[in-house]
Length: 75
Image 1 (cartoon, rainbow, N blue to C red):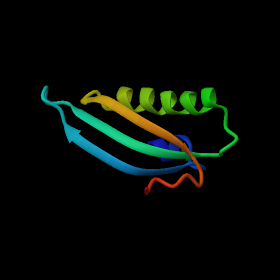
Image 2: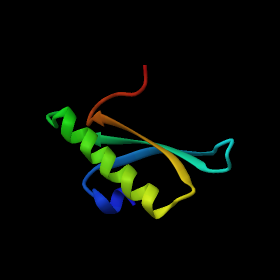
Image 3: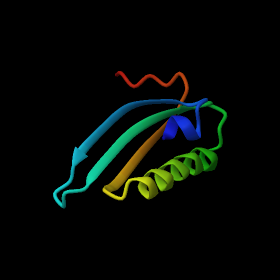
């Protein structure tokens, strides 16, 4: 769904787990242009989270980590 809403973004590192209440928690990362204002990156994440939770009620938690394109996650 994230790729459908924002196909130009690099969505990656998906992780889903079962929560204690039987629902699901989803975590994912998204590369955004390094010049993207923080508010815009948060808005993008909020749109995706809202749409995913509406489409999948069993999805109780969605965490989206936005990071600038070219950001190296390995230390």
